[in-house]
Image (cartoon, rainbow, N blue to C red; front, top):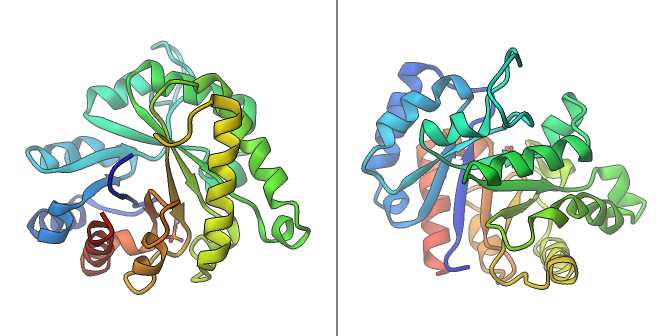
Length: 248
Ligand code: PEP
């Protein structure tokens, strides 16, 4: 793992004109160009984004993928092969919003992970506890259970994103001590089940902004950031990329 990776998760935001303006501005931003960066637009705009990103250093990511790995009668689904076909390098899997609003369980997520790696995509597998789980001091057990799904991916290329649910879109950021504690725990757990954790990047996500990025990236256990809200604002995202680049 070298350098910090910054992935912008646009969630269900964007329109053709707004995406064009945002990607043009990202391409023109020297800090974004110098960092390791990806953006994750909604499915509908992946083709547009792929065309606009051509020739840049900004990679394309999808926000989700179907668990079905063969083409067929799965109305509304988008397969990993399709994502690879339109130029995606990464795919988010298990984001807490998918777990919460779409009842995605571990069995489904295991299938999505398999489908993604089989198509040559790099899954960005999201884990994290709710506020109640943190307050009950159950967060490590919850995260261990979520990580167990990665068991079948030993030796494959993937990224983990630690995103405490209570810090996503709330403006509440985990402290650097809390982040380091969980990142060390994730590394140790992956080492135990896969035998190697150094090569696996662990991103932090949860209200990462321009003014807290330096402190978060100063942690060696942090391999980058998954950024939601701030990824829609060129100036904020550019400053987060700058902070990522500084710590390399
Ligand atoms: C996310 O969507 O993964 C996220 C971390 O969102 P935000 O940065 O807005 O908290």
